[in-house]
Image 1: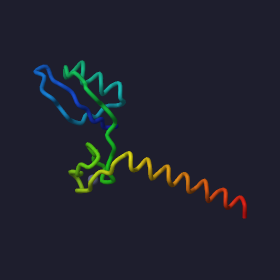
Image 2: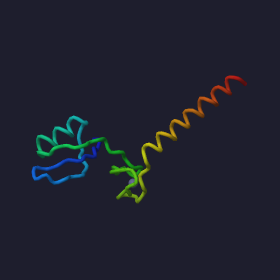
Image 3: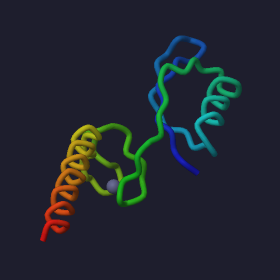
Image 4: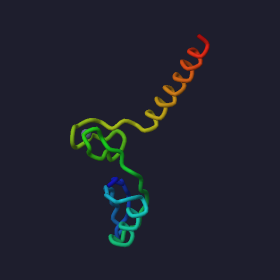
Length: 96
Ligand SMILES: [Zn+2]
């Protein structure tokens, strides 16, 4: 089951920052709102570390292996850069 990272407020207005396991996004929100009576502020799928544990937020240290989570924006940029390079190489190969 995927793990979701959420921010919510309980009935006392206490801020909660935690992880929940659910079949999907809708189920996670439903459980939080209907079963736990939380007001969901934000929720997103938690990324999983190479050791299998969910990584709560970029820059935070993994509890399982001590690795620091990378920034998703930086990863996206790297991916775009690689995709761009692949395009250039592909074009060069087409030429030669
Ligand atoms: Zn880890």
